[in-house]
Image (cartoon, rainbow, N blue to C red; front, top):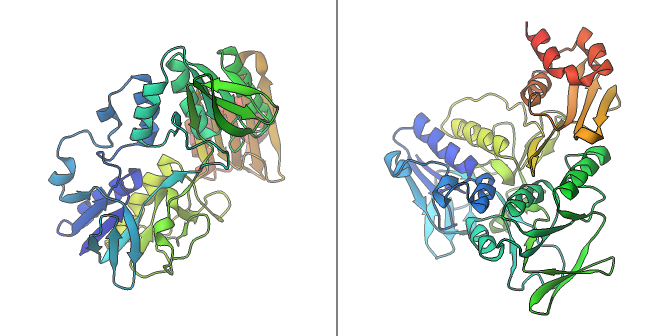
Length: 411
């Protein structure tokens, strides 16, 4: 059997290793295209701060790991997939045949329609190459503008502050991390960043990037102009699927997959940030661009590709845990509520916040800010669909007892 994987991120690497475990004799080819050993994008912020070397971002640290496991890694980009001939065309012109194909091509940054983003000194923070460019420009005391305060933006924010830059964040929404925090939580994160010396402009859009007085000049819709030595663009990502145009593979905002990670085309599977799969908490379909989902997708897809039975996928839980300049925040499941009971407690002075959402007798969503001790408990109760019994009433009185509830319900 000839297995080919497009993508060498967490989903692709875990899939390749699982394929080898389940099929010791199959041929496995993983196509990377980034000119580096397969690495984790989540490690890039640590590289930016100097806490790790570039090698520390690698998903597997042992030298010769892929060769030792019979996994061929091709450093090239995919320009075309032809399911009719079961072949892939690489950007260099070579073709690769497959018996079974896994598309784990991840996501790619979105560039907003702002004039001037093609200027020198404007970079995304998505690849190791981006990281090297940022390191060159983000010297201590330099002026940096970060466009976007979503999940990725806030991860980058911490790294930039650690480098001692003068940082201004420009966010179009009315709060930070709007997709994982409500108004209370997002505003508390903003207040935290302001206290750390970071200038945060919410409800503000960049309108252009020009040059003035030897620097970049970022104009915003308030009329202000912000000087910058570096502009980092972190305004979201989209599934990386352009090379599938012209195929019959069904796509929406990601590649549509069934509960066995199959696409609508025979012998073609998809996993990770490019795949739109079952969502745990709604039984709908969604793209969950987070590493835990990617690795789970890769493992299960590979089992199914080798003829194993991983069972029907229960769906991935919408979950984010974020460190913004030392403030830990987390969101789980249906944190906006489903019309059931909800409760929250706020301690703005100490940057602590807890919100729980219930659907009848089950915990279905939560927000946490300033806490690290309850993340696993919340996730466990939601994913196990645990009936809360008497603990629901207790948590409605004091949502901070979530760890106590977890222990009580586990006995």
